[in-house]
Length: 156
Image 1 (spheres, rainbow, N blue to C red):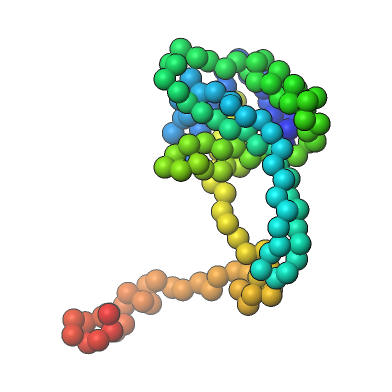
Image 2 (spheres, helix red, strand yellow):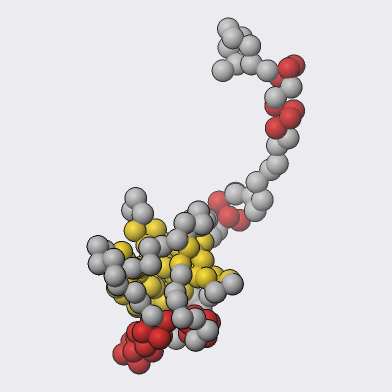
């Protein structure tokens, strides 16, 4: 989801709901404590210099249980950020506190903002000898009695 898409989605809502990949809802008293542009300038393991930019939203929950951020207020925060920071229509990344700060992608479906887990990846698989698709192994073949690991056989 990019910046213009979240603004459009917010114009349809009275209540903002975010869900985590587990389906659990972010508590309704969350705050958006930061909106910003994050630029990453790096070199991958294959030697290619890269730049990536995203719009970052940081969600935070505190103990002010009566706090509710309206869709109109969040849209105003986004528009202020666009003016003050010169934000472009980039993809949105959401930070939310779990065991550590998690980074999530964002989708909008049936009136709910859905956070989805992001993953690390090798960007130079061809230079590193990493196949694009992992080979598939039939688990049933590994679990057949003839391939079973017997105690004392030295296979495990």
